[in-house]
Length: 155
Image 1 (cartoon, rainbow, N blue to C red):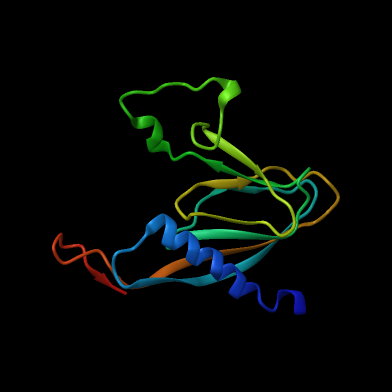
Image 2: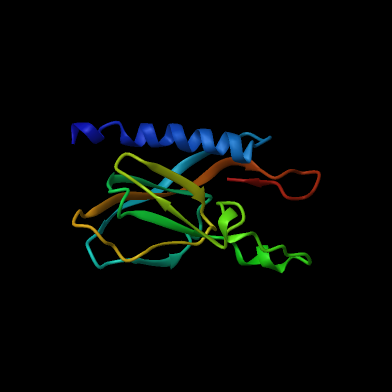
């Protein structure tokens, strides 16, 4: 347990950095953890495709994961294909920006942050280790939006 005593503080450093770089808020608001839970995935188990409602940024900290057998899969939002022009990428050139789904291998100690609306799953577990992860959600407090465009919200 001593190893994990600073986990929340360490996670928040990454969450705060993500929030500042990705959202770059121009109002007085801050991000905070709303809930967290532990997932244990044994050989032959999986996690269905889902997203996290009522959250801004979600994340996973991998407490026990084997890069050869463990990962998380992200799915490109459906509206990506609703554009009027669609150019299929070469299969040999697929990457996290142009693939319909992206499989990200993970290992012990990794932290993965993503927008909560992004659908994700975990394939059927192979390997003998119990994939153990701490997942979490966040939200904001303070003021978001603005009075000029009638979107101000004080949380």
